[in-house]
Amino acid sequence: MLSVSEAQRKLLETLIPVETEITTLTQAAGKVLGEAIVADLDYPPFSNSSMDGFAVKAADLRGASTNRPKNLKVVDDLAAGYIAGVSLKEGEAIRIMTGAPVPKGADTVIPVEMTDFNTRDSGSPLPGSVNVFQSVEYGSFVRQEGEDFQKGTSLISPGHRLRPQEIGLLAMLGKQEIVTYRVPRVGLFSTGDELLPLDANLEPGKIRETNSYTLGGLVASCGAEPIYLGIAKDRQDAVKNLLDDAIAKGVDLIVSSAGVSVGAFDFVRKVIEKFGKLGFWKVNMRPGKPIAFGSYQQVPFVGLPGNPVSAFVGFEVFLRPALYLLAGLKDWSRKVQKVRLLEPIESDGRESYLRAIITFKDGEWVARPLRSQSSGNLFSLTQSDGLIVLPAEESNLQAGAEIDAWYFSFVP
Ligand code: AMP
Ligand code: MG
Image (cartoon, rainbow, N blue to C red; front, side, top):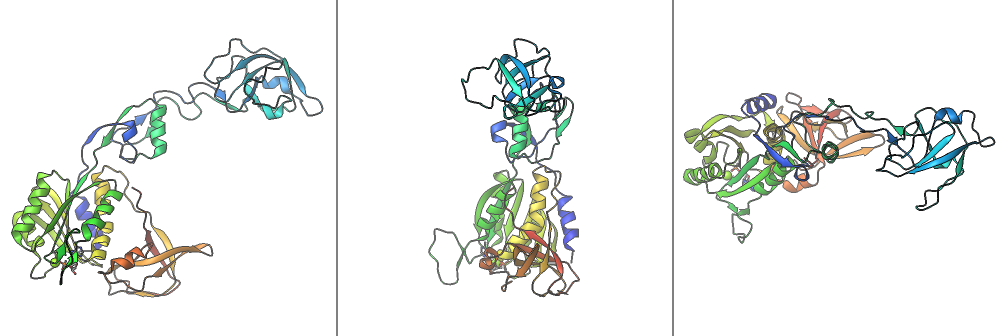
């Protein structure tokens, strides 16, 4: 039996990222950047005021106080978007709005609050002079040209998922089109004679097909696109038909659930063995020991176990990192939270993923394992906040022990 980390490594080493394409900026949020973004200008592009106030020479204000204000002659009025018509001389001030370029001759801005002209009302007439009640350091309230970044600075690396703040930064640079990785397409199908589609009436011995929907949500949460292929009966030709359909639809990865253990009706594994390539299929984990990895017509294939929780856990352990890699992400390491166990846990020595309620209490993260850990009980998975991970070989942990938790978070 393979260890989880060996199986992960073997799967990931067979995968390569999808190709890149051009995306418009408004379509780019959540996509993975496919080019290096280097500043082609200094930012801010010009020194500007960070406050509404008066542009001044700091030296003119030396010694200013509430009792002994310095009086400056106001010589111009400067809104954001305009250049001052005059340059500032000793003893002068120019009224200036946030974002307006600091005029020639000025080095500092005094906010209106520090003056006797404490108003921002639009249309308020410009005073002939202004009293300033305090001195400030040279350069105060000025955002200096190039203080955020300079031309040539590396701003965003390829392989980074574009969050709203990166989209804004790209807009600052005037990038209307950028190179991103294409969204990976993941073909999903289920197998089993007992499975019915959602629009069918339940019949004795049958259940509704569930896993495609759970897995579709997980695929989307990785920033990939689920392609729903349907249900195959427990027959070789039915499974092969859906695999062929997946190929016809041009998916980047095929994921099935059920039919991969050693049951008499487990045709998925047999079909992949016969018509494709089967890597390996037993991993030392719980739930979800039987997992098939391989390929079908050069497209990577992962066959998850059928039980709804096993399929979910198998996805989190193997397919989330796999999809991140396919999507072009450079760093797909999982954020792990250390939590304190509120109850003892046991396992049979396989790496165990247990559903838990995870909360922040009395200054620390704590986890209470769900009573039902049955791999068929999807309801108990909906009641949990995350999985706690008991490593292989550790057969039990006492209450109070620290353990790794994977807090569910479904934002790509
Ligand atoms: P199998 O891997 O085929 O032995 O299936 C294991 C268990 O998971 C059985 O109880 C199946 O009925 C159930 N199962 C398999 N596929 C699905 C599915 N797509 N949705 C819900 N339950 C499933
Ligand atoms: Mg089955």
